[in-house]
Length: 308
Image (cartoon, rainbow, N blue to C red; front, side, top):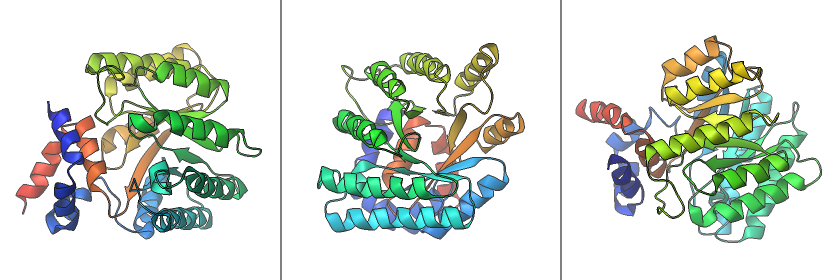
């Protein structure tokens, strides 16, 4: 019930406008969002690196409505990659296609993302671009985009996809990505989807996550397991040990500001860890979807608001 509520709130343009312009809303977001500027994200990335974890940086935003907005979004990512190289950070970038103008022109999005991948490949050492997943209306087009981009000469291993375990089609999608040698970030999913295309029960979503996770871990390709679920993490650790999968052959991924204790313990145990760090002014939909994934985070929000 809470999950459905937070998903509905994420889609409210009125509440978004109020939240993103209010001092209370901006203060509340700081636990989960590094800040509004590139420098804020770089500063947060350096702190995470010093704690022994890698970083994936996301400039928040989606569904831009014109080419100028898309090019401005891409420009920020170019700045980010330049600074990652200059500061020798262990960090890569995560992009949403609709933030790169996918709704405006697929050719524009292709041009902008290809430019980012080309820059990532040319870096020393070469870097990586994760193409994020959005709602189900974009699933097939996003995967087609990633497969096409990954096949281009020089891009192999430097472009990745995201799979959501609540999608009933996810197993087939994973099989195709693995066949092409594409790195996957596996998450549970945080959009409102109907029963005919997405599992609704947590038990089904979790069971599918574990099934897909084991497929990925045995593939020999480096993947990311994005979860804060301690039960799933324990299953992954036990599976890696039983299958003699090295601890550096995959990584756990968690969100900035969530379960820092668990992040630290996994690093201490020698497991790969990457923290997803978002930044930007368009933080409201992101925050609501994080609450939908883990309603317990609402307690933190409530405490912040009560402080006035």
